[in-house]
Length: 230
Image (cartoon, rainbow, N blue to C red; front, side):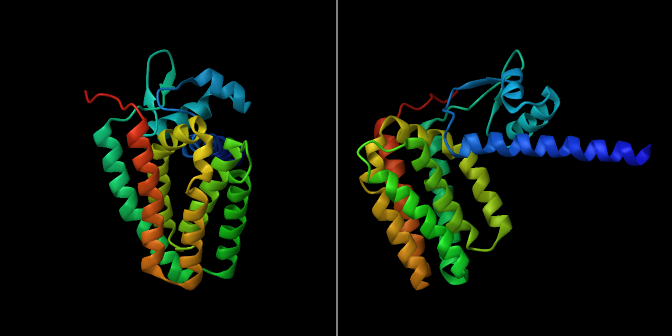
């Protein structure tokens, strides 16, 4: 009986982990927007599980600062103030830039191939008259995390995932509202990042990654309405 109980707990934790990963992907891929509300029941029904693993996943994401608890068993994707967005951008430049620099020094051929596949998928969408924004956002995320993964530092990648939980909704909201922006610089910036990593040029990779973050941030700062500080 003790063994059966332990197996049940393992499965339960697995469901919670899977729910966490799927919700995290919704956030980092920008498929939910700042201010969006989700009920635990709606999420549980969509995932085909009971509320308990969803509650566990949501609790973790609230602790991460990626969701906010509201009334009636609901959660909300946080809105962001201008100061918070600028602070997040500053930290991303430091952390993600370092990961790109490390990737230039430690990447393997398999890492480069993963970057090339994601870059090609993103480029294919950007070259279309009407890109599939959902696909473009997915390939953008895959390209960036192929770069970060090439640093071969699980701790660094985990930190970056935490940053993207907060950045994803607002960054990709802009992409969905302005799909033509995909082809107006993003394609070239990815190529510059990839080429720097292929050459093993750490500082060029850092600078190229920083340029990608900065250009996107500048567009959002110019177009977005931020929450007022409380």
